[in-house]
Length: 215
Length: 247
Image (cartoon, rainbow over all chains, first blue to last red; front, side, top):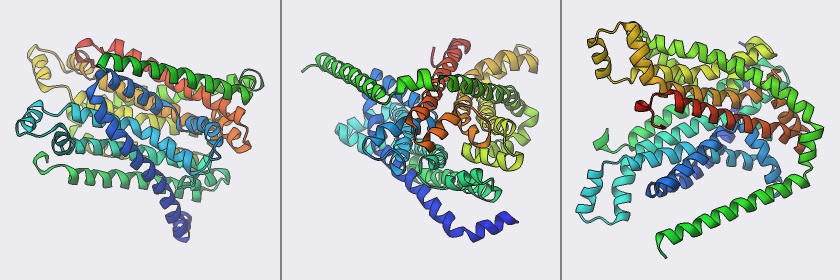
């Protein structure tokens, strides 16, 4: 009961924090799409480059988020942004690389050679093939990678509150330090709800972006 | 310029950049007194907290594997099929929950200390393991099952000799994901009184003591990468060659 009252009384603050949270995740995942998709397409040309890139990205993703924040503080504080928005965005950007690059790479690699052949046959240049055949066919798989990245990074951003990035995690961190179950549960519920909504929302977008012939 | 020469140049640039960044890292480390911090000032803390950290991971991760794999196998049995789709829906939602939220909920119901921390880590690790064990066994091609039944295998033999060996790669992938989540979340256990290397990281951040913070962050990152590598090797050598994409 107390918790519901707390949530109603603090609706504005929750909305503000949720917006902060979403800003970090969307700026970072947005830039991760801009870097990851071209990298994923580029490495389809060279098996060895692909293995190296995927290996590096998989090592980055195993580094625990709080350790990554820690490792970035001394590096970023040389330009005066050791804590706050920037390290959170960079961490999310790095973590998003693996799901996005891996899915882009797998999707482009797995396109039926017959389709590529047909596109060549109707006289498309390689750029046209990429833009009109390969990317449209790969979009659902790439979106699945984006979805994985977003859901995972909503959790990472919650932890980023400890390096001063704000977001919904601040309810949890305050709840812990003040031993206040109201803030604790509000924060946990809000972050979880955000992750679930993002998961379903992106699934819906993924279905809408799937070309009609593939549904 | 032909492709081979181009690759040669590229490799030289890569090696040079690598060496240069190692050099820069060395300079920064020396300037920050990090070597002294790690090897002298915080060495006792690091070893003590590392033991605590590994204890958290081993107990919660071990229990999660011991419970998760059998649970996944149980859910994939034919007589459970009626319920398993519903249960998997719950597990799918569960895996989207952020680990900090699981820790927070665990603290609000169980209080502070090692037990709530281990419980939260166990839950966070369990979900991907159950999910992958289930999907791994369900994805075994039905013609294999058919053939095994045709040879007269009992359901028990079918499970042990056909389904588990064929699903093992996916099961291992789940264990790797779960343990990676576990190791990544274990530093946060400090926040709810579970101890471990998180103590150095969080205290270092709030005191703005970079040496202290890195004394926690570097071992945590190292342990995470090492564990994932070791699990990857185990996966590579235990999963039978015919169904192992890595071998």
